[in-house]
Length: 83
Image (cartoon, rainbow, N blue to C red; front, side, top):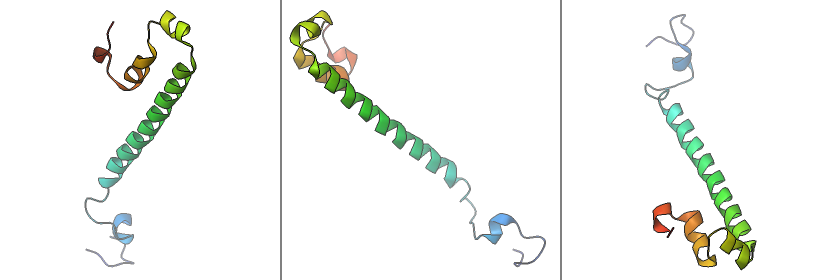
């Protein structure tokens, strides 16, 4: 490894980066993107629950839903619901 001040030193060596550290940043970026996407997915689900829960029973019936199915519709999979 070259000494600081030497023309052969790289920028990564100059700031004290270790081999493999550069590969860590894409993983951190992916983790943060998944975290951010999960946050917005949870917000969307909560908003959907609030909107559907605010509907009256006749409107839910027009949509083909019963009040007891709202949670499974929003949080469960489609195959868990009756059609």
